[in-house]
Length: 117
Image 1 (cartoon, rainbow, N blue to C red):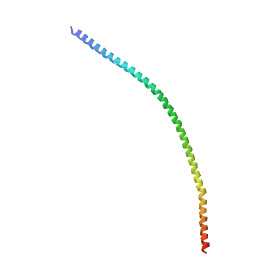
Image 2: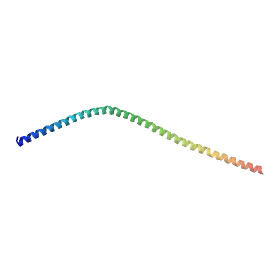
Image 3: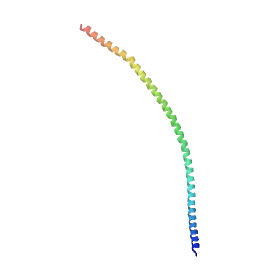
């Protein structure tokens, strides 16, 4: 056997080994791609309904936030009205009460002076 024949046989064996490795690698890639496709299908079957449910819940939350905002505006308006009413009541009642106490005090002093004389 000559060197050229030996080199040809060695190259053929190496080529056969490389072809075997590539075949095994292709088989593994093919089976992994099948598993990946199944996992993707499962994910889509779970994710799409979940996304729809999340969207529905988010829309309901936006609606609820709008209701709460309207209630807060209403309560702020009521608070402002109550403050105005309290201030008006204070102004309306304070002056007559002070005047009433002043009259009572003055009357008491006058009565004391009249009794004392």
